[in-house]
Image 1 (tube, rainbow, N blue to C red):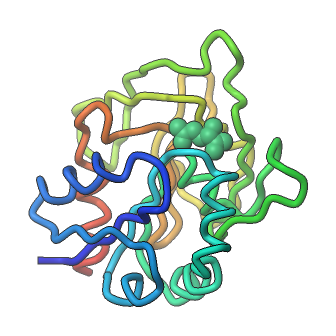
Image 2: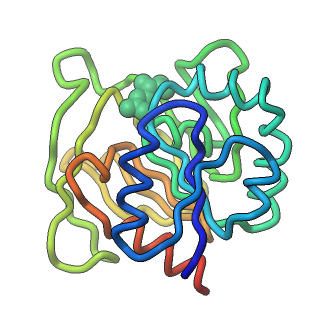
Length: 193
Ligand code: GLN
């Protein structure tokens, strides 16, 4: 079975491990570069992107992760994980720079105060007719997408909340909280090739 890592420095690691095990993948928490080298795909979970970037630096993982993404590692980033995958981050700390690789601009904490956490049913054609129940928790808004980026889902107001570019998938929301496993399956299928 495909071995898929979950970046385990901070955030909701356990829920993603459970999802991966549930779809028959082998799940491995990743905290060091040797563990990163042992996986064929990676989930970057939600949490707090500024804290995660700080930890990535102190664990000497930022360079290896950038190299892995540049080398084609399939990655699913949710919420803070999407922020880390984004090539451009606005509303972050000055000069906040994550892993990158996904040609999008994201704005942190931009859904507005009253609705900074909400659930929504999303139409995601690549996953089939059944809508996705999505939990948004102070998630990032995707403000711009490059020409190579496919929008997988949008809110009714037109804002993109799920994107894909090659082996990289980015979500503004948390699928693992609502028990939605189809994005993890998508990642697993990319890993299998
Ligand atoms: N607000 C967080 C950030 O900016 C993301 C929240 C989340 O991952 N649920 O990093």
